[in-house]
Length: 300
Image (cartoon, rainbow, N blue to C red):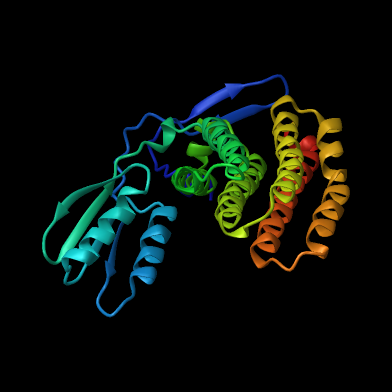
């Protein structure tokens, strides 16, 4: 099983490392073996654009090297397919005609740092929270929407890297990761993406809420405390501060009570949606805290 997983055959070299109480055998990562590109053909005849998009993204997440979209490509269909492909990090369109679009993955997974992806997602999410709060006074929803798309792209890329590392031990070794660490980091990034998504939704519904200045001020104060919880939980992750993670995990009930009180006497559907998105955001923050607490013994 180990030989097959590492694609080793009779005559291949392996590394031997002598330790105090053991000898470790490992497969070399010399890049000499040629691996045939993994190709998928997606037929578009009779399929909705939503289904085509799902299949393209699924192929990307499953680490296909070449994605061929095949069928009669009208101008609007071709434009939509190209837009989907261009929103996937590392994918480049290499051929196009009236019946097919072929895209190729030009990304080297071995050069990707998961820690860097987490930092980038976190930084974008922080800016989204700040600007989402600002939407209470100034409408900048479109800018927030674009940043949410970037967070999604980073998460898709992370999925590709983590999936490849779990399947191929050599990639995991290059990343310096065990499977339990990869699982933890996937959960962490999924929850960061949820926070970013809720920041986008809060900004959207605030535009429709038509609240009085005093009510807007009340929402702003609650929202700022949720942002502080997010900043604290990410600080707990970066600094391995378990006490801080515990404090974030237990602080949510008071904030949820405040949000429930806000909507109790108000018959405003948009205001209710704002509060529900903020609640969901807070739950994602608490889940990050639980992940940090739960992984302490396994990773740190």
